[in-house]
Image (cartoon, rainbow, N blue to C red; front, side):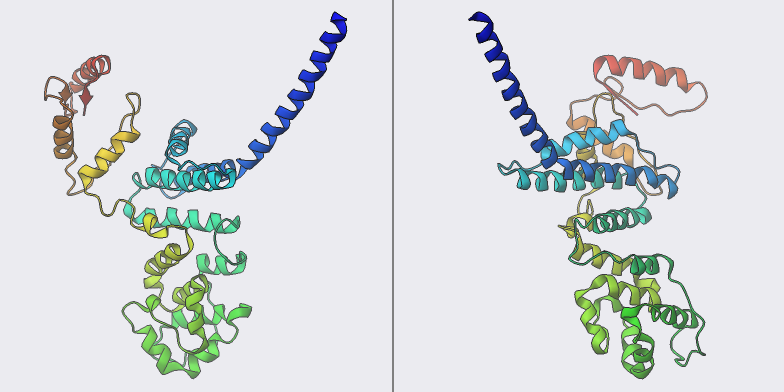
Length: 325
């Protein structure tokens, strides 16, 4: 009887274990979109070294911010809602962390890469991904057509428009450009044409800013940065927050936010540029944290023989919780 009871207990445990395993697998699958986006973001930032060799990111640092995003995410009882909150939190946390280490001219590039990658995966955007349009946007090819009949339009823009006409959706564009030349000229001469309606039926592209960017790319390439930002604002969820990230904060407020991302084992590196005054902000923040110059807050100007002083300060600081510049 004891053996039978033991067998029954084992069988019950196996059945219960199988049920638990199935529940775990279902829960794991539910979080797969969060994991997939995390993988996409990691491999995206590792390729930033192609933009500038200085941009190097480790998996350990990425995981630190991945975990931070989980803690920051809004709590939800429903699994689908929870995963959406996790993805939104991860996206913004990683973007803010990375963008603070980028030169201004590279921030829009990174944000555009993020937006286009999400579109390719069907996560954002309400239209199917069109690789032909995307490649045109990147490369802006040209095509030698008849002589440019529009004296106000640069030849380079005319040749780009001719290449655009090779795409099915824009097959009538060159003809309309010539026929409605006065109206297109007015649009072309606008200070911010990306914000103006295009002539004729092309005005409908205000509802499809990606395709409107192709026309801006051809005729007014100097306005592409602004046009791209308009597109990101309208396409990326909470796009304004990404475009305006940190723009309303002063240097001290950004420093305070960065300190929350640091740990006793994670130093903060400052990329110095003309006009920046990092030390003044650090002095104020150190004072606010109760640190005293020369006692618990050390500033070492590196030079010949200063390496010994710097190492001594670091040794003292890491044992006592001091700050060292």
